[in-house]
Length: 583
Image (cartoon, rainbow, N blue to C red):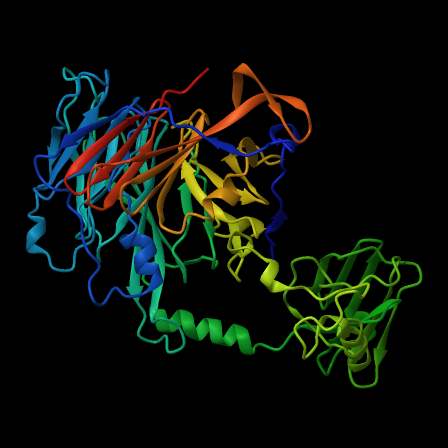
């Protein structure tokens, strides 16, 4: 049984600034331009039966403004007439009205249970589109932005079941076979779920292909479904189509297409009630592993092999226990015997005495740990000083209790920690897992459209940007940029709705539900001499914070950042904020 590798994100220390002094509010005016829309944005409100937090994350906080990362300063939205509208900016002073590039063939107002229409720019000449009713479109566009060659033509159009939104898509060309892989997200009702919300999240990985140049028809050649209990923060297909990466609070697993939910639940229940293959205990000096044997077993049927960091137990040719140990053991002093109660007992001597092992074999979940009552009592005694009936019984002690009142709101994280998982596209199994712990997910951004989207995580007070590289096994996630103290600053914005950054990392920005937009620039050299009064030293760089207030009472429904501009979409207007980045 293959076990997913537990990985970690490696921070590049040169990209951190321990002397960062904070953002200075700048009153420099930000040029802001407003365009009135011909028709309102096709915003879809949540229905009464879409009441869970997952519905709010997936559909209630949906970003209705889409950035075409293949072309500079080009954004799209879909209006309530079913038109895909595009605004491409060349000069801020000469802004044209958004132009229609495509019209959905279906009348969206005729569907009561539809979701918001969604679009993803697969490549420089291909677009995937969902109308929110459960229909998927694959569209050849030609070179977008070039009026001579741009022509949106439907190449694939098929109903794929219940309504969904598009999360990600890629275009592949292998041996003259063109294919497009897309990720579709649904929040579906699970009647058999009596404990939770009654809903589950499904991600469907659909691959559409055309076999050769002569065959003009695109067909679905592969459909795989992942199920989970939370809407993923981030989900993207690798550029070569061989894998998938997901950041989420609760894990996802692949299920066969067409498998009944009841069948899956029965399988899960049977796995839960399955008896452990082995039991293990530990003291400060050693570990004891007990494996029950079939009645007709003899000593010749058992093979036990010890290595300093590895153990291998085989019973009648079948591996019972095999893998890397949590820590090193003295393999020469370790022994095993067959007990009278038809079980084998293995004694492993710890090399590092006193070290408590959280698991016996790394990643193995087939055993059960049995705690010694004496150990539990000793642990409780060691932790006694942290508990008291009084709030702060003796603050002068050597080990004072933690005072939760000293914590700020931005120091408090979710109880559950997120995880970053990489799934193999062929085996449909998890190959890499990163436990993100308190590294809160902030946002994602496409830096290079040929690569996977980057994701930004909070690390202590900073916000770190990570670029996935599926081809680099030794450095699958690269730390490429840091936004100093942004993790701390954003936590104080209680009404924030959307978060973004420039593809060249020159600034990060967030907007609230109404009007206000906050811009946080990277530190830049000072044109004048400035001194830190406390330390008496000259300050070489200053990071500026700017605030823009939009003249509208309509809620913000879309937000995108490019290297030079911020685009903010409300239900009836499109605002363009010129962010004058400095080199």
